[in-house]
Amino acid sequence: MEEIIINGGNRLRGTVEIDGAKNAVLPIMAAAILATKGVNRIESVPILADVLTMKAVLEALNVKTNFNENDSTMLIDAQDSLTSEASFELVSKMRASIVVLGPLLTRLGHAKVAMPGGCAIGSRPIDLHLKGLRQLGAHIVQNGGFIEAEARKLIGAPIYLDFPSVGATENIMMAATLAEGTTYIDNAAREPEIVDLAMFLSEMGAQISGAGTETIKVVGVPELHGAVHQVVQDRIEAGTFMVAAAITQGDVLIKDAIAAHNRPLISKLTEMGVVIEEHDQGVRVIGPEKLIPVNVKTLPHPGFPTDMQPQMTIAQLMADGTSIMNETVFENRFMHVDELRRMNAQIEIEGNTVLLHGRAQLKGAAVEATDLRAAAALILAGLVAEGETRVGQLHYLDRGYHLIQQKLSLLGADIRRSEIAADGTERPVLSVISKEA
Ligand SMILES: CC(=O)N[C@H]1[C@@H](OP(=O)(O)OP(=O)(O)OC[C@H]2O[C@@H](n3ccc(=O)[nH]c3=O)[C@H](O)[C@@H]2O)O[C@H](CO)[C@@H](O)[C@@H]1O
Ligand SMILES: C=C(OP(=O)(O)O)C(=O)O
Image (cartoon, rainbow, N blue to C red; front, top):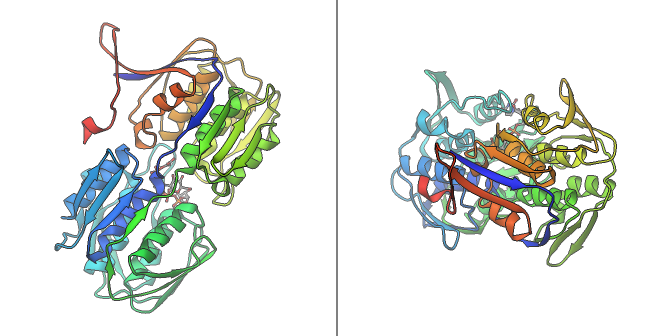
């Protein structure tokens, strides 16, 4: 069993480097399926469990991949003939594998992808993905735990999304690149990761405009080719370090952070009294002695990101007074609250809202991550808790953060990752992901 062990109380100081975005690289890897000529070269690929799962999904489809972890570059070659079936075994490991549906369907005319289940944070249906693909002319059946989609040729169409779903926007946008005619996606998701995917698709020869706005226009082209692309910085990893600096009275430069991608977080932290400076080198975050309580509501971009919600609750707990967090994107994203209570946090849950009573006198405890961002939140709580916090179930953390303990330790935190033997003895863990590859 592995744990991250933190002794709280240290101020964080220094500069931290942030990896490429998980939520950008996963659809970009899926988009590489569309290149029938030439090899794709993806740079700034983060070393994450989810990236290795998507790599396995691609390889099972007969796409060749080569991940050089030393220079964070992945080559993806989809020039050979591909299979069109993504197994339950792989899709069940990672919900985001559903984004291979659109590329496979539009390239091969057929795709069979296992139904992704729900996950800890919610039921997460894919009705909007399917509705959009049907509007492009796909015939789709759901049978035996699989979605089977067919269309000799997709035909561009106007599509309105009832909700700006990130995954549905990505699947439809990718499917539309090789469709005949023009597709408009209205009420599209506007996340920076959508913009990054659209940039990659354009570099591959696709004709896309409007990514990052409510309406995306895709004019179908006959074929796409391999491209070189650098993945955008992970705004959620950057945001997690912003909160770490804010709560520890720290002074941290988040190197090359793109402030425009973290506007809602920066705005809320500023309201709390955190000093945030935007420099050419990145965003500097200086935590005050006292944090002011704030109320936060998660929304699709450019609203406050749900993927920063658990981390933000730690900042709210450290404020002098009561704050409210309202989660509107996922129905079950407060699983970290029970673990925080074990650390002496006073939190009340009322439906999709929590009341966080600060300033919390957090006490170190043994806690378990329940999902990816819950893991990050518990580590943040450990940074400000009195005594020792031990965070378990680290496979969730490894989905989205590479070597977070090393990055925090370089900033001055007392933190380590260890393998704990049955007799309680500890062995340091240095390399986390590659052993699973
Ligand atoms: C790999 C990836 O990029 N994951 C991100 C992506 O997930 P994901 O793409 O799954 O998130 P969506 O934007 O699709 O989901 C948002 C909400 O819409 C609902 N919904 C979605 C699709 C659908 O067909 N029907 C439907 O009802 C979901 O259940 C959820 O309540 O965006 C989320 C919202 O910013 C982030 O938290 C995830 O980190
Ligand atoms: C919810 C997340 O990811 P996923 O959609 O891959 O589960 C996340 O990154 O916080």
